[in-house]
Image (cartoon, rainbow, N blue to C red; front, side, top):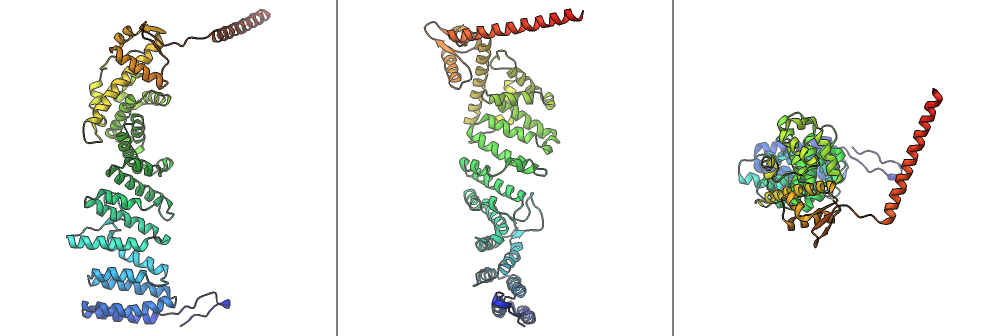
Length: 465
């Protein structure tokens, strides 16, 4: 039965093929029940109905026919026919979007586990198979479904999940670079049909696999797609921990101690980590360790003071005493107390490059930070001091002392001038005549204000008597 055309011819004619579709579906099922070898005949029978429904704009029955065609192939265990039928149905001329979507959603449960949750992953984990032949068929069907969803906005969520599944398959085969390249093809941050959590999880997988192929520059760029405010939302604790764990791998490769300290402190401040003492102890220890290894800055000092008043620090005796040393304006001996315990921490011994180069770098950095601390302390108590005497106080050679002072002056951490012939180090900048006169005028002004205030108070006291 054909529906009437609207005035002006704006609505397309639609016919109702429900009775015919039901009859053809019963005939096709009968053919399959008689013999699975009749699959080609059954598909041909349904193809004629599919064409009429597609041309006649009978979308509900078109969806029924498409789903039934795929189900027949699945029931007959004919994977070749399944893939070819899937491609044929979705690439028909003027094929309806609902029909394409129905075909994809019909086939997805045959390759992905969409019902149960495994390892925290739901909806994109590939189904387990028993042999290599089934594995190849599963991967082929995943690839076919990805090709179908390519460029279709109404299937962008399905494409993202299929892409993650294909990346898992590649990674399970040992092809980490291939898995990373596949995930990078999808710009999931532009997808509107995915939830905020699913987007974050997808980008985290991109970062993880990119790190897996040792492309740390790209991993850092991809990681910037995640908004830190999103990670602070309630219910995003697991994603936050994973994000900053991945960031710590990038910053460890870059040997950026202060960024590592911030990464571990972000993990430490997560609510679910605070509930487990073993986890927060490890995160807080790592934070203190890398703060100790960080170069001097106002931000680093602010973080040191904030952590120093953290109540949990009292439970970490070594870390607390190390911070006490750093925040006290006294010279620290090298090696300082508890240095061996600090260097034995897991975060210190983790080696990103597979050798001992990073551990050696951290040890050298720790010694440098202690020397820099001592030079800053010396600059507070001495305006002038002989270089040999300062080197003796700090336990350094003259060359080491001069080199470190030069580096600190270049970085703006301290003011110093070295008079080599006289062997004198000056930590106080000489003032010009104008500066001295300005300071004298300022002091006189302050003195006069104090005298004026005092006279006023004395006069007030006399009046009240």
